[in-house]
Image (cartoon, rainbow, N blue to C red; front, side, top):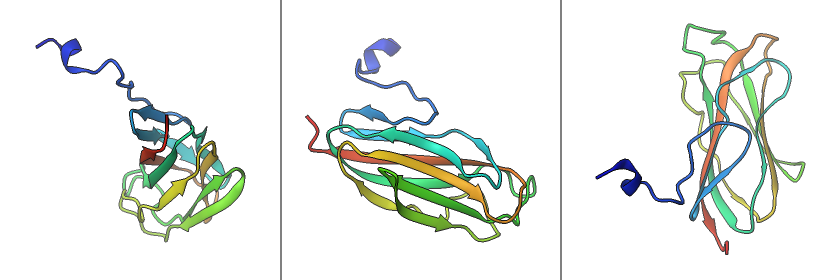
Length: 139
C-alpha cells in the first residue's frame, strides 16, 4: 500500500518550535533542544483553541551526563495568561529524564508559556520541553 494511503489527510507534520499542534482530539508541542543558561529561556509559547486540554508536560535535559555541567539546578515555569501556575525545580543530578510529568488542565483560549533557567550559575545546558494532551469540548 502506498504511503499516501496509510497517512490520513488530517495528519500533522511532526516539528519542533514554540507552538502547539492539534491532531483531531489530541495535541502536542515539542520545543526542540535549546541552550539554557541563567537567563529565563522560553521553550514553548502558544494560545490554545476552543477546547479544554488535559495536558502532560515533560522537562528534559538533552546534554548527556558527563557532557555538560551535571551539577546545575534548573527551574521550569508554566504560566497561563501570564499567571504563574507551576514551578518545578530540579536538583543537581540529572540523567536525561524528566524529574516528573506535571499534569494540568488548560482552559480554552489560554496563553501558555513554558520556560527554563539555570539557577546555579551562568553555564548553559541543552534543555527541552514537551506537552502531550487530549482535547475535550472542541468543535
